[in-house]
Length: 179
Image (cartoon, rainbow, N blue to C red; front, side, top):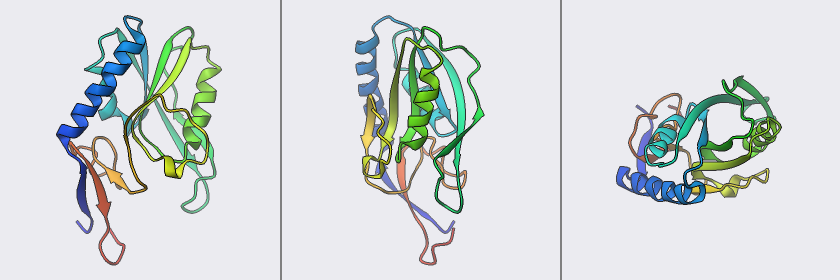
């Protein structure tokens, strides 16, 4: 492979932090049922690890969204590729995301989901890049705040690779910038 991956957070650091965030969520919700919405594909590994540490009754649902535009820049237009299977009416909802950077997709998604009548909506992310924020999004639970680097592992990918790494790593391309 032409790229290299440098460890940013070890598997032990990631597991410890997910446990700490789960404890806060457990305190906030107590015994109230919580409906987790995983944003695919990247959020799947994180959501499974988080859910194992939650003590209240949980249910899962999944969404896949795409933001597209000309060239490498997102137009900010969000397209729902896979919508939810269940109603949100009256449920406490926790959106589980792998990484939040510009916030455009999440701002749109929270607005769409809020119109479906949940009791509450909160947002939990494994990684947050606030330096890239373009849209204001309130993140309720964050495992790690990171600088503007391209990261992989724990569900995050580079060209569909590295999702299965048990740690968070930073990708560096070769000197030609090719993969």
